[in-house]
Image (cartoon, rainbow, N blue to C red; front, side, top):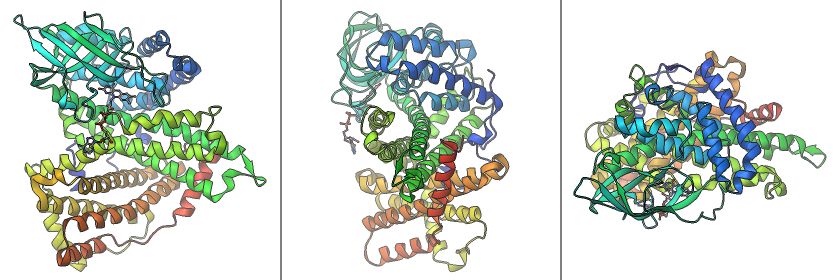
Amino acid sequence: MTKTATTTPTATGGIWLLEETPVGTVFTPERLTEEHHLIDQTAEEFVSNEILPNHDRLETKDWTLARRLVSRAGELGLLATDVAEEHGGLGLDKASTVVVGTRLGQAGSFGSTFGAHTGLTILPLHCFGTDSQKRRYLGKLVSGEWVGAYCLSESSSGSDALGAKTRATRQSDGSFVLTGEKMWITNGGFADLYVVFAKVDGEAFTAFLVERDSLGVSTGKEEHKMGLHGSSTTPVILQDVNVPSENVLGDVAKGHKVAFNTLNYGRFKLAVAATGSATIAIGEAAKYAAERQQFGRPIACFGAIKHKLGEMTVRTYVVESMIYRTTGLLDSTLAGHDPADAGPLRAILEDLAAECSILKVAGSEMLHYVLDENVQIHGGNGFVKDYPAERHYRDSRVNRIFEGTNEINRLLIPGTLIRRSLAGSLPLIDAAKRLQNEIMDPPTLAAASDTPLAEQLRIVAALKKTSVLVLGLAVQRYREKISEQQELLAYAADILIDTFGAESAVLRASQAVVDAPHNESLHTDAASTYVNEAAERIQTAARSALASMDHGDTLRLNLTALRRLLKFTPVDTVSMRRRLADATVDRGGYIFR
Ligand SMILES: Cc1cc2nc3c(=O)[nH]c(=O)nc-3n(C[C@H](O)[C@H](O)[C@H](O)COP(=O)(O)OP(=O)(O)OC[C@H]3O[C@@H](n4cnc5c(N)ncnc54)[C@H](O)[C@@H]3O)c2cc1C
C-alpha cells in the first residue's frame, strides 16, 4: 500500500458557508482509486470471513478471541492507515482510513473495539506522542500485539469531561501518582495501554499513557448494556499508580488538546462507521421487502415501503457525501506533508471541529433512522433475535451518546463558528448584515433554473444564506452570552447540518455526470429529495430561531427576508424515492457503492 492523495481545495473550517464551492472540486466515493478499492476488499473479506462468523462468540465476552481478531487486523494492515511508516504504520491518506472504517462499521461490536483501539489510542499517540513514546508503543498497537483504550469519562463527569476528579500527584522525582476511577471504558477489560486523563495536583488537566501491568491498575465488572454485547465496557480503577514523567502525553495542562482533537477525529470516524452499518441494513431491508409477501405481493411493491427504502438510501447518500467531502479537505491539506509530522493533522482536526461534530450528529441520527426503518420493514421479525435487524437497532443506540452526546455536539457546531466570528477569523456578522440588505433588494432573487441540479444548487445557495442570516443575527443579538441560548444554538445546528448535507449531496450528484454516468439520474434523485426536505426543515427551524430572538416589526422584517430567500417549488420526491427504492430492491442493497 502506498500513499495516495486527492485534489480538493485546502480546508478552513466553516468557510464553505461563506464561499461557493465549485462543482468538480469535492472528493466523493466515486473518486476512490484502484488502490482504495483493494484496501476495501481486504477489509471487507476480514469482516465477512473472520469477524461476522465469530460474532456470537464475541457476544459471550470471549476477549481472547477479541484480542486475536485485533491482532489479525494488525497483520492485514488495517490498524496502520493513520501511522507513518517509520512508526510501523503505512502512512496512507485519510480516504484509506475511511474505506477501512466503513467496513469495520459493518463488524457489529467489534467495530467499537476497533474504533477505541485505532481512533482513540493510536491516533492520540500519533498526534501527541514523543518520538520515544511512539517507538515504545505505536509498533505494538499497530501490529495488534497490544490493545488500547481511552479513559476520559468518570461517573460524575461525562459531557463535562474537564470536570474529571482523577488526580495526578506530582512526585519529587518528576513522576506522577494517579488515583481515581474512569467509567464506561471501551476495551477496558482487556486493553494493555490506557490513555488516561487526570488533573495534575487537582488542577492541570493532562493526558497520560498508563500500562495495564502498572501496580494499582485494575478494571471493574463488565457493564450490562443495551447493545454492543461483544465489546468490553468496564470501569478502569487507578489506585496510587506511579506513572513516569516520560508517559505524559502532550504537555501537562494541555490534556484538553489531546482529548478534544482525538474526539474530533473520533466523531468523523463514528459517522464513517455509521455509513457502513447503514448500507448493511439497507441490503437486509431490500432483500426482506423483495421476499416477504403480504396481500399476495412482495411488500417492496407498496408505496409506504418504497418511501422507507428510498429515504434510507437518501440519508445514507448524504452522510456519505459529507464524509468524503471532508476527507478530501483533510487529504488536500495533508498532501505533501511528511506523514510522520503530526502537526498538520492536529491543526486540520482543530480547524474542522464543526464539520466533525456535524458528521457525528448527522451520521448517528441517519443510522438511527435507517435501523429503525429496517426493524419496521421486517415487521414482527424485526423485533426478534432471529433476524439481525434487532441487534443492529440495539447496538447503534449508543452512537448518539458517546463521542460527545448529540446535544453537546449540537452546541459545538454553531458555537465553534460563532467563536471564530467573534475572534475575527470568520466574517459571519458582516456577511449577515450584507445579506439583510441584499435580500430586501428584489433583483437579487434568481429565477428558477431549468435543469434539476442547477435548481438544487440555487436552493443550496439560499440555504447557505439562511444559515448565515440566522447565525449572524444570533451573534449580533447575544454575542458572548450566546452559550446561554441552547435552544437557539440547536436550531442553528440543525440548519447547518442540513445545509452542509444538502450542498455536499448536490456537489456529488453534479459530478456524477462524469464520475458515475451509469446511475447519474439516481444521484440526482437522492440529492434533490434531500434538498427539498432540508429546505422545508430549515425554513421551520429558521422561523423558530428568528422568533426566539426578536418580535414586532424586526421579526416581521426578518421573516420577510427569510420568505424571499427560501422561495422554491417542491419537487416530486414521491417519484424520486420510488425510483431509488426500486433500484435498491433490484440490486438487493445500497446502490451508490
Ligand atoms: C458503551 C459505551 C462506551 C463508552 N466508551 C467510552 C470510552 O471508551 N472512553 C470514555 O472516556 N468514555 C466512554 N463512554 C462514556 C461516554 O462518552 C459518556 O457516557 C458520554 O460522554 C455522556 O456522558 P454521561 O453518560 O455522563 O452523560 P451526561 O453528561 O450526564 O449527560 C446526560 C444528558 O444530559 C445532557 N447534557 C449534559 N450536559 C449538557 C449541557 N451542558 N447542555 C445540554 N445538555 C447536556 C446530555 O446530552 C445527555 O442527554 C462510553 C459510554 C458507553 C455507554
